[in-house]
Every structure is written in C-alpha cells, then in structure tokens.
Length: 375
Image 1 (cartoon, rainbow, N blue to C red):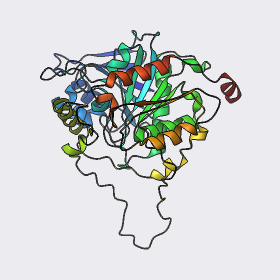
Image 2 (image 1 turned 90 degrees about the vertical axis):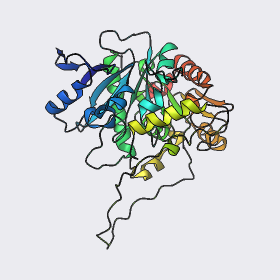
Image 3 (image 1 turned 180 degrees about the horizontal axis):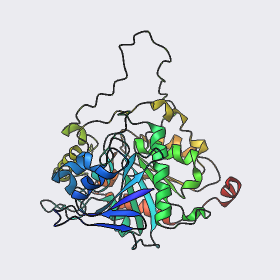
Image 4 (image 1 turned 180 degrees about the vertical axis):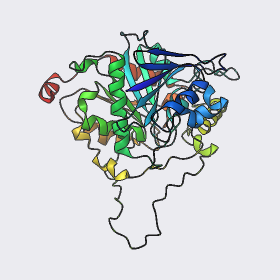
C-alpha cells in the first residue's frame, strides 16, 4: 500500500542505499526521491514538488520522517512523522494526524524551525516536536497540490477528496502502530486547522470509527455560509473552470499574525519564507459546496473546539455555535486562548495550545454506548 522514504535529514548523502524490507523499499537522502519516482506506478512523487526539487525546500524536512502513502486511486500522498521509523514506533505514544488549512502545507505550518533548522538563535516552533515531547506520536499530511504532495490531473483540491485521502492515511497509521481497530480508544486522534478543520469534521461525520478524538482548531465553520454549486448547463463553451495557480506572496504568509507582541518579527519572517518555499503557488480549491455538509449535530466523537480569542477567521460566536450543536453522547471541550489569533500554535504562547491538545487526547472517555451502536 505504501513506500516509506525513511528519515529525511536531507543533507547531501554520501551514497544512496535501498533496503528491501517486507516488500517495501526504504530510501535515505534527497536522491532517493528521484530514484523512486522513476520506478513508481505513480507519475509523480515528492521529488517533483518544491519540497524535493531544491536543497532549501528539502532542508525544511530536517528532523522529520517522510513517507509516501498511496491513495485509493494510487495518487502519492506525502506524510510526515517524527521519530517514527519502522521498528522503533513507541506504543505508549498516542498517534495523532494533523491536517493543514487552505493555503499552506504541513511542513511550514507544523514543523517551523524544527530539527536542526534553528536560525539566528531562534528556537523551534514545531508543533510536531512539542506534541511528541508531551507524549503523543504526531503525523502530518499534505493535501493534493500542497507541499510534498503533487497535484492530480484535475490540478485542483476538492474537500471530499481530502477526506478520502485523510481516511487512507489514518488507516496507514493504524497499520504502522498495529492498532486494534475494534477498540475505538486505540484509534488515532485527528486535528484539523482552519479549513482543514472542516475536512476533519466531514471525516468525523462520515467515518467516526476511524478516529478516537477530534480537534477542531480555528475552524472556519459557519452554518450561514452556503457555497454555490456550479451550473449544470451553459451556452458559452469557451468559458472553462479557472484552474490557474497564481503565486503566493510573502505578505499573505504573514497575514495570520495580527496581535502585536504575540510573535517577534524574525520567526514570522522565517515562517513566511518557509511557506513560500513549500507552497510557491496557491492551490485552487473547487467544489466548496461539499463543505455545506458540515453539520455539527452529526459529530459523535469526543471533540475539542479550540481557537484564539482574537481569531478573525474563527470568531467566538461561530465557535460557540459549533460547540453548542455538537452531537450528544460524547465528551466535548471548548477552549479559548487569550491574546491569540488564528495561528495559536506558532505564537509565543504556543505551549498552552500544545498542552491543551495533549491533555484532551490523553484523557476523557469515549462514548461507549454510541460506538456500541455504531459497530
């Protein structure tokens, strides 16, 4: 089902070594991506994306384990772990999958200044490192056309396709950790940020048995927003769907930082540089009407709703609406972080966020009655 690329320390390797184990090829170093892409059944791999094409992009992966997971249509998905190499998976650490948002992919978002990337004395702002230090086993993935996952033939990103790809990765995590899928407590947790929170919510509504806990972080949920469908018929056949991918801009990468004193200028600039390296062009989302199916009452898994108190994209009245209407019968928690905006996990007070998420994932009890009925 998948091919793992081993640990991506991504300094110039002295030699390329391929080791076959249980039918899977493990490759170490930058050159491994190109070697594998030529023999893969898929047309593209991470080597064909900004993260694998140049040394600066590849350096962002320092400290991460990089895997290729095949989606149900065989499209390659890039998945990132940390201290998660096969054979040393720590069974005491609860796995959690992180989903990125609308514009920026997982590596700059969840692994900023991680590994040995420290620049000018800046400390790590890697959420993946923080969660692992607190006792979780984090993974992150890139949706199609983001970061290390190449776009598919549509050149677009579709919500329900993101849901299906995330389901595939959750299943892969279960197999890596040898989880008992009959025990719902053992299943991975799922965190989605911003628009990724809507993807996570749709997945929880569709396949609640695939996860043990749900974290909706800075969710863009708004039941009053209804995305229109494209018209069935048209007479102007010269007009086509706009799949033009325009360049992302440096100022756009820093626009989530809105509260003075919450993050110094240097790490904000380094985030913007990392974001543009990973995602130089803006992904094109289509079929946003699929998000119209987000219905809080259909979420029946333990859920944490968390956001900054000054988040302009996830205002408190909408977070209240989301929390109050979550399905009954499962634990739910609402956490508001003071003096924080949309990117809480990157701010100076980010330790609070990591502690809240870890505490929620490790504690509480699942609704046994509901899942007894489900299964």
